[in-house]
Image (tube, rainbow, N blue to C red; front, side):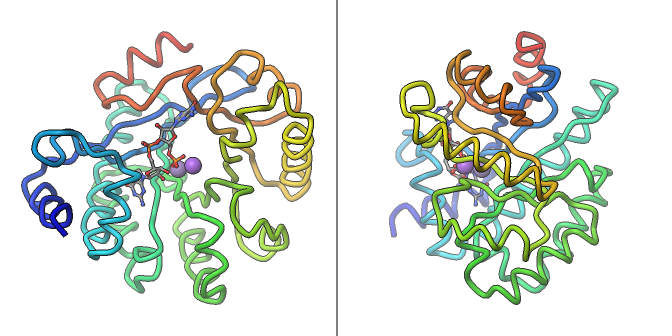
Length: 255
Ligand code: G
Ligand code: G
Ligand code: MN
Ligand code: NA
């Protein structure tokens, strides 16, 4: 409750920030995208609060609608500016919560964020979770088709940790999956995790779905994933999430 009140105040007083973690193409090593991650630097009593603590509070209090729309608009604006500065295409991935996804007006919110920023729809990726797909499957399918019609990319985040009913990959319009970092972590030592990763990549590619590996920390993990034709990687091997101003120099180091 205390955190909810402080969070509302922080949102209204523009005290939240959006940081970006680069996403690397395993085909050519370039940074082709970035994931937008909310930050609350001054948090409670001046101590930063991490999103795994304040996002659930935002969801319980309903503040996620306001917070989520602000993250989306900021991410679209920052990505459009980055594309202009680089003179090439970039993509930005935005996480959404169930409450946002269940709003009838949500596709309109997305369309307006694109229009006001000038960002091309194909540069925006919306990250949803497996559990969001399994609740209200009819409505979820409708929402994903609405996003598709806008030209936005649909990504399933934390892949492998939820219901893992693979049939939904054929039933919903999904462009891309992000393999959860728990499978990547012990890749070098755990044959079972490696086997799961091989199977996920093969299955996704057979369905024309691109694959991102999360939580890549070592060169060995990167090389394994590249050998298995995993398309993209994200993790501390490349960079943690940084401010948009820091991102360009981080990119220069990676590339
Ligand atoms: O940045 P970090 O890796 O600590 O993020 C922790 C979690 O918080 C991530 O799993 C991410 O999905 C979630 N998160 C961060 N920013 C947002 C946001 O803007 N909206 C939603 N719904 N989740 C977010
Ligand atoms: O959306 P998602 O839940 O994936 O949010 C990303 C989270 O993953 C953030 O909390 C971030 O700090 C964390 N993270 C990013 N890269 C790595 C990594 O390489 N290893 C580990 N252990 N965590 C990471
Ligand atoms: Mn994510
Ligand atoms: Na994730």
